[in-house]
Length: 138
Image (cartoon, rainbow, N blue to C red; front, side, top):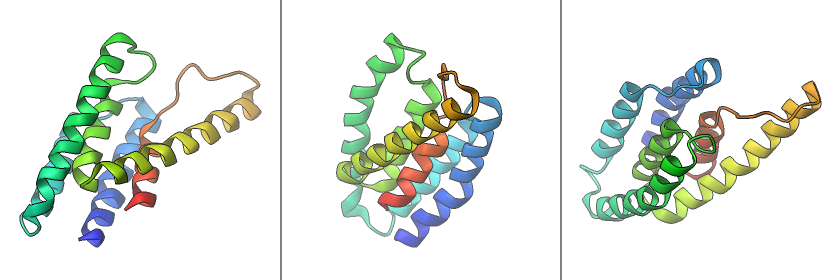
């Protein structure tokens, strides 16, 4: 099961990261493909699906106000990616660890941008950090 998660993250996740780095957008079509593959994993492990749905629901309740109120702090694509990753990872504790790893990688990314340009970035592409954090938490 974990090999399948790695394959999904390494294929679609890297593709999403590449697009986010280049355009600062996350295509809904790739998010839907990742969600479909994530849901298909639970055909063979049906007892884990309620935990994954609950984790996605909890993160949706937390992220929806953040996305609506502060559009600059967290983009809608990043919020949707976190929800898809919650379904893919299958539990809230893996999703929380992925977000912790992603935050650490985002801080490193901000520091590298600052060291290179001597200016604080106004925004960063967050999908690469999210995907890398998810890869570490699987």
